[in-house]
Length: 606
Image 1 (tube, rainbow, N blue to C red):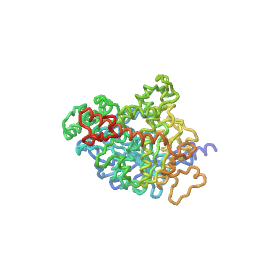
Image 2 (tube, helix red, strand yellow):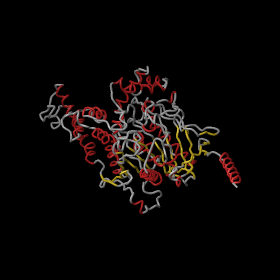
Image 3 (cartoon, helix red, strand yellow):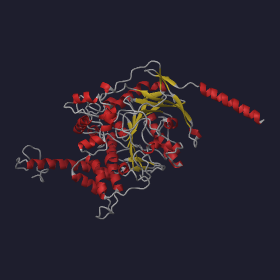
Image 4 (cartoon, rainbow, N blue to C red):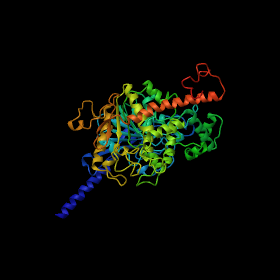
């Protein structure tokens, strides 16, 4: 009997092996040619009901390699190919320095300028006219990839019942160097993203996707990119919903002033033996330099050459094309593309400043005295204004009131974290949410206060840190991992976040998976109210998923109303003082003859 059972099992195994071996790999035919992918299995041991096959098409090129005379130029759409494109391995990373990336370890693997590719994840069976969720990765515009080891789109596609697309785009100087003129206007990385969205519009139907139901989402620089698409006329119609996680193009780091971008472009040229007088001469030389040399010199060496301190060296610029004006001006004008949006941040986004400054403190929080507080916050405050009075006002607002006058006995860690969190993440997003709402766009706001069991930044003391929501969006808590450990409550939290995010792709409403849906009694408890200028409602991303009102209202009023007025006033006073010191004359009314200053603004200068 035992022998018979063994024989039957052996025969069944042989049949299974033969069937598995004979299954053809997934393939689709796009406008550019046939693409062959690979079939993956999403198989969370603790949740067998979520098991599902996902077809992955990896490393699909959407643009010609941006090399030679195409370097520092807008991308050129990929030409059709003959035969079959084997899309079974991820494409090259765009050139970038090797840097620690939290629990993902060091970004390794092959990198090359021929990096403009996408990964497409299609759940099986494919939903009818599947919604599409497009991921634009973060990384300060100089690191990152759409193929992060733990953030594949497999779980998100399987659980969310959507097609997931992850995009690679040019980074650092190769993606964002600008001379501020027609020779190298900049924003190549943003144009890469747009071309990828156009590729999706033209080809996603071949995968079973609906080009009319595309949502774009990103974190940090990826979120700033998403908000750039929200105000870029050329991106209109390429998506119907947008999700911005801890980033906004109107943030102080979201764009570079033209003069700063040009100065850095020519300084980089000097470092790589391309010291030239004109933009065209600089371009001709830089197009002949090995990309490794550019990457090696584009960050710390460049900052040392200029005597500057900055976290982001190359970033988007107002080029009059992709960005037709200053983002804050475009917001004020209501020049915002027609798309619903989710806009939010984590409670401790700014903790990354302390993590970078104290890399050895993985198990316990560092002690940040007043001197370190001023040092760590200075580069971020100076993005808004270099005037000492502005920095003083910010530090007074956030000072630890329990401290005495001994600067070395006062722990300012939380003050440091909140200055950066509010000043460059929470409050710029508050302005964006208000502007989008005023323009008639539906907005859903969130603030993640939950401190997860595992942190993306790999430090146990970091609270709800920058990028901590990403694993929840990609379903990492649903799968056992050596790098991430989560509780059952956090797994349920991930399921809810996946539902919110994928519903945005499906309907533009995080509460509805179809326009005919009505929330059940259980879902009503987690219903996400739309943001309004009267209620200022938001969703607290935590296991409880409670709703709240007015994220950081007092702090954002200071950053968005008081600080701009203070900056404007200091600029006027500075002009008046310069006028006085030059020996020029005043009118009887107390203003300057040339109209630079008025009696009210020049009292100190007079």
